[in-house]
Image (cartoon, rainbow, N blue to C red):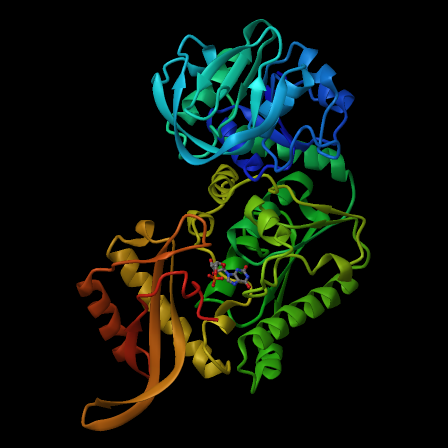
Length: 513
Ligand code: XMP
């Protein structure tokens, strides 16, 4: 049975993948394609509906992205959003101009509930607006189906041609009934069944990978994190032993983590693949000796990783494909070319230039983190791996303020293990986005038994966040903190003080370095 698909035609809007994700939440498969894709290619994808995204341009500017107007005459329903709405109006002879009053943020909208797009939506609702142009006059055959105080065409449609447009953004949460509108479009207007689940994505992707790769050889840098683990399992199910995973254990992982990764992906694990573990802790400690500047440490850790990976890749010889566990948020982060470098995240980019291969495969490129976790569950990856919290590429190297030594790594690993165990015992894991122990570079005086101590202070950090760009410190119950503190002091030699980090991001970052 052919898969029903909605295409999101991307005109450069910032929410393009979010639209796709919302459609997938309606259990309809959805892909984002750039507006440079030809009409013929789009027709060949056989979409049940097409969504034009927003974008930063003005349709009346000749250099702005446009599209072959024939797309509006295919008989396939089209929904234009923001710039996409203006483009639809403009392509069909309507008038788009600079709005006398720009609208940004929450805006009251009056909708015509007789429109199929607004079925079951409140007559007076709230939508998220962000526009400086507006549709001044709708094209012939269209009618206005929503207005705001400052926007005479907040929505328009031509029911006969199945063309719909909204000036606001139904995909963002701030549009109170946006999900209902998208569901109306996808299910009622495009007539999709809503029978797509992550299992079908996984199954189809594996089949496509198998066809694409044929008998080619595939190499994957496996970190043990969620993304590379899911990508690796998917590839192993697609091409088995044609896949080689290289796992560089830099000695800066959490307690027992290297062995846990090996247990799943190594020769005794359930998957059919070639697994190479490189125990490189010694090399890293040598390189990091005497280095305390955070960016310098990050660069050393990143460069060493690339060097080791290259050495292993050279042993394997030329491969056809390099797998990367890139997920959608990585695509955005690495695309922020002009923003200031706060921290250099070493696992975004970097690898391809040092390994000989023909093509990069990124099977998770269009998914959000929770979708990747669901894909992992569909693949049968153990829950402790699938629900693993984010862990930075440079590992404990950036959770130890100042110089990194084997002894300090041992302290952080043990303290962090106790912290994680007690958070789990208290049933709090699900409420925290990220939590870990770090080691401050501070030594202070204490007294244990009858003796003076001069030892390190462990810092406990726990935050909640939805996007990791901003974060709130968590209010962990005092009794839980007390228990963790006692255990760390009693069980981890070299620590005589435990501090809790109450700072949000900004002004702090989540990691200490
Ligand atoms: P910060 O410390 O920048 O962290 O607030 C935000 C999120 O990114 C993770 N992080 C990294 N992840 N490589 C990574 O893969 C890195 O170099 C890196 N630095 C920070 C951090 O754990 C948090 O989830």
